[in-house]
Each structure stands twice: as structure tokens, then as C-alpha cells.
Image (cartoon, rainbow, N blue to C red; front, side, top):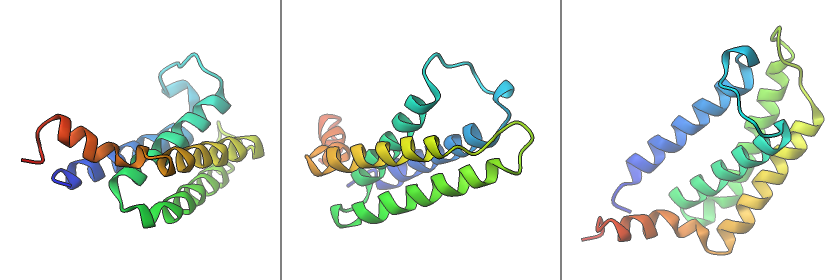
Length: 124
């Protein structure tokens, strides 16, 4: 992969955005017209698929475990904020998103980086 550093950087930027979205007061975040649980599912599914595309296929389980640990940690940290409360349903939505991301990766979408680079002519 030619642009590994860029893909990894963008992935970690998305992780930072997820951390901010999980811990900042809701009033400081842009309004999004989707359900909270759908947001959790989509965020963790996207992060899983993203990192499964960046790292070798053998790292997929580690990606899933790391993202699940991140979700558990962020939910726990919400207990120490004034405007957030941890919810088990959020953890379930995170886990469902991770599982969907892993299934999609296993189905072949983990090659998205290589496909994008090929389309953009980066492999030459």
C-alpha cells in the first residue's frame, strides 16, 4: 500500500473525532438528524472497516477488540462528565457496528485501500 501513512492518519483522525463526539457536551456538537444508536453503529462500523482496510487481514480481530475497548472506555468516561451518561445500549450499538464492519471486511471490503489507490493510479 503506497499511502499507508495517509490512511492510518485519517483513521486516527476519525478516532479523535469519535472521542470528542463521545465526551464533549452535546450542546457543543453539530446537530445530526439520526438516532444516537444509529450513530454509534455507523461510527464503529466505519472505524472497523477503515482499519481493517489499512492493516493486514490477520489484524482484523485485534482491530475489533481495540475498538470495543475504546467504546467501553469512552462509555465509562462519560460517567465523569457533567452532560453525558454511560448507556449499555450504546455499547451494544458499538459492538453491532464492529461486528458488521468485521463481516464486511471479511466479505472483501477490507481491500478498499488497495482499490482506491488502484483507481487513483497510486500503484504505478
